[in-house]
View 1 (tube, rainbow, N blue to C red):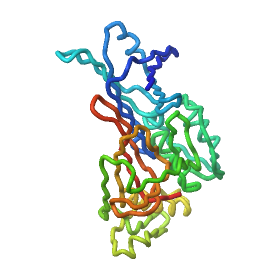
View 2 (view 1 turned 120 degrees about the vertical axis):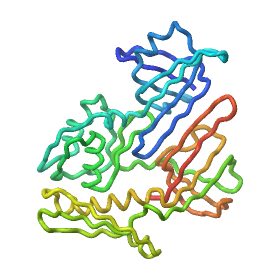
View 3 (view 1 turned 60 degrees about the vertical axis):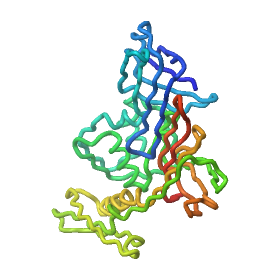
View 4 (view 1 turned 135 degrees about the vertical axis):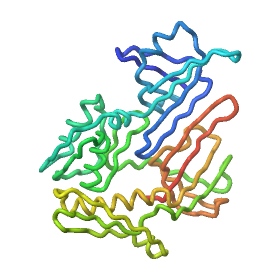
Length: 313
């Protein structure tokens, strides 16, 4: 593992051997995060203070790119240690608020030029045809929320960042993996949750006296009953009202079925990968999508914690 701190002036500081590290990846929010620890020497304090970016490589491949949030130096009877924490590049979009605005024909290029590129994010991979649309931005919305809402209301997709810092818009499918009864696991769990899953959303425009009802038929058929009422501004279009309801239901289903695995290999899977189970000790035999993964190593163990949800490919 090679890790680097990058200063605001472009200076790169190669970190000595890491004593402990953890990289967490996800599809959307909360954004990716990292934590690393290594031996501290006072001669490197100025470099540590100037660092605002972080990059890690494993076997020649970038496995994390992000922002430095904070670091802490601890000197005790156990030695001198420095710990860095930070987040993925989505943090730049999350940390910046947009001004209220109304667009009658907004394009993806316009959204990127106004809300993404000015923050220093210029690596974007687009693999979807995003139509123009009328689009409103509420005061206080983050740049991430602006981009997320624009993509969802236009074609029902969500943005995310790759581990090497590229903003992915469109098809973000990763590798296809297979696990069976002979695969090495250190832990497995399955959780099925009904609480929080929405069966119906009633989207209302009180000013115009209009409404749109959006249902979750699968949950309703299984006996689920959990309705939400959402009020939208007067200028909200009919298609945006329906998209609002669909978004609420989609978000509520994220944690309906979760499978968690811990395997003794580092970087075993990333969000967007698909895992097919056969002869699983949990009793499942199907394809699932990697929702989150956490890769870690310390003096005692190393591996990857993988969280799977329903396959949406």
